[in-house]
Length: 332
Image (cartoon, rainbow, N blue to C red; front, side):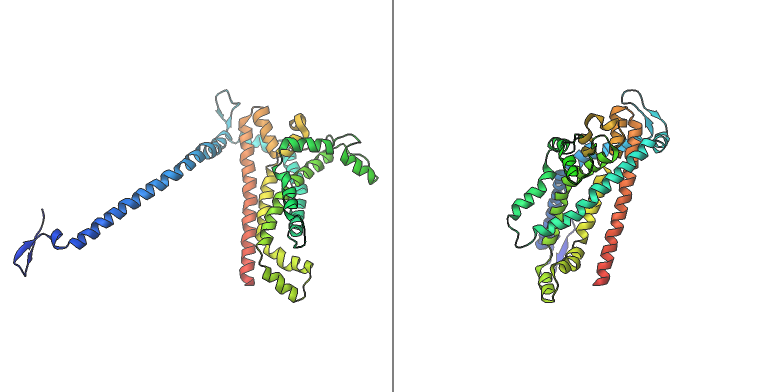
């Protein structure tokens, strides 16, 4: 029921809607604004919905299913059987698994540590003002990162062949050293794969460091030059401290990549990659269980263990990053 009020001047009853049209107009505009805002919100959710749907199908579901498989015995065809922690016990008591952990860490260190050091050196050299053909050198050093693994396998199979006439053995003979069986000896295989990892990823880290160096204000270098600092002192006391966030980033990504090492050992060793333990990595061990032995339960258990290892290194990276941030705030 509509209520009326008395107009004292005219002595008549007035409808409040007609008596205050401005207020009614404001209310209508507010309702219209809320309706349009709600439509914008719904349309925004609809735009991002495909990403979350695809992520749930090809990203989240496989992870959850792998965790579920870690507690099952399954060969891909027969019905699943719940075995509890038996898969984890089987993996953790397998000497080959610990051999793969050892190989992953050793080849990861040999392939990762040099690329971080040389990445900084190459980035510093590529940023020098007097260097000519900078774009050519930048493209050249980044080229291995985008090179097909088939081409990489062909290149390194020639470079590190077991024959005495291979390029690697020829270089060793020039230094008076005996030839190495790169494809059959344990340390020869590890060194060859580590060099392959270094060759593929040093350009990627170089570009990251180069971007970090170019983000440093030139005023700092000009002030240091006026104060009498030489190039080495500028590198040590200006460039390196300013590159710390980039170094932490590359250390983290390189560490995670080393723990997931798979392509390089596989293409270098070929068909014998999964039958030998000289260069067996954690991911290769996982792949062997899943697709060679059809033991998806132990493969999933290995994947969960690998996830724990990666999470532990991620936590260490966060700790180091926060420590760098605290030191910077104290220095300020």
